[in-house]
Amino acid sequence: MKRIYALRGAFQCRNEEEDIIFQTAALYDRLLVQNHLAEGDLVSLLFSVTPDLDALNPAAALRRSGRGGDLALFVQQEPVFKDSMKGVIRLLVHCYLEEGAELRHVYQNGAELLRPDRTGNTAAIPH
Image (cartoon, rainbow, N blue to C red):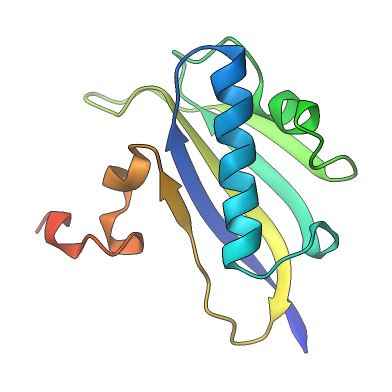
């Protein structure tokens, strides 16, 4: 039996259209592969973007890459906090997976530092 789950992911990128498209598609593809998902299993995607990234909306980037055509996509700007990481796009995916599935969140291209507990780098977890 399937139920709805939420998957997280994030990546760092340059403020350039080409890099935003490439990195958005790479994260999206990796989330699907690692969680054995088809696009039909996805319900919606919520992106958040740090204020320094304004070259291209990541929802538009995903569509330009030929992905997410029928999905509900939403983008919001990240709030600004002191010493927060710059150049980051985060993704929250609502999807259907088999009940009890092991969720595989994806942090890449420098964003692994945001959630070392979800990337296997437990030595970097602040205590």
